[in-house]
Length: 115
Length: 113
Image 1 (cartoon, helix red, strand yellow):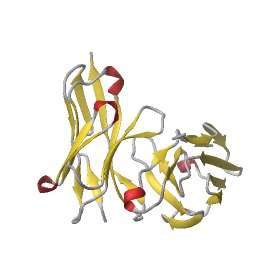
Image 2 (tube, each protein chain N blue to C red):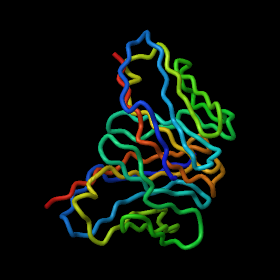
Image 3 (cartoon, chains in turn brown, purple):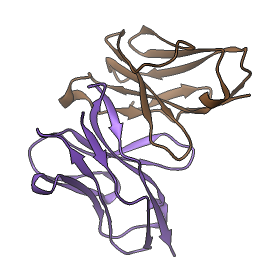
Image 4 (cartoon, each protein chain N blue to C red):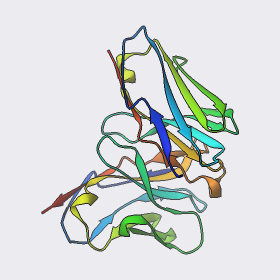
């Protein structure tokens, strides 16, 4: 199984809502990532988890809160988002974060619209 | 910080013609380099990667890329494109926060019938 799954596919939320994005992989990977991709732009790294511990936070606003409950699951909790946070949120995983093992597999993404 | 540059925003190729997409990297040591493809509204699929060793790497879907240190390039090639190759292509390197990927701006590939 070389698949990374993400739910939901689409999400529309108001600025006062609280929602969560979910990402799952069953490849035994110990590194998981969140990226944000605005329309017609490349993905930008948000967070990196290595062995269920947050290793990198790319200065992301606190209204985005990541969580890695176990090695297969990665969540992104959303609260009080702004319309400019509307984007495609991509999850990825790799065996490890170190170079030779850092071949990242991406999920299909969650298309988020903030009204 | 490591970075990659894709100088072509759009490329138009006739179906059956050959393709070359350009990528230049900026890093002193041997970088980790990747090519990904993204169809509209979809996630990214890894086409191929270069870590070390043989400078000509073969990927999926008939793609290949050549690492050229003298030119700081890692260009993607395909001998004959199909209409289904129309997509956005991203060159990437490890360097975003050291463990995450840093992407080029992407090249939009259009296939003419």
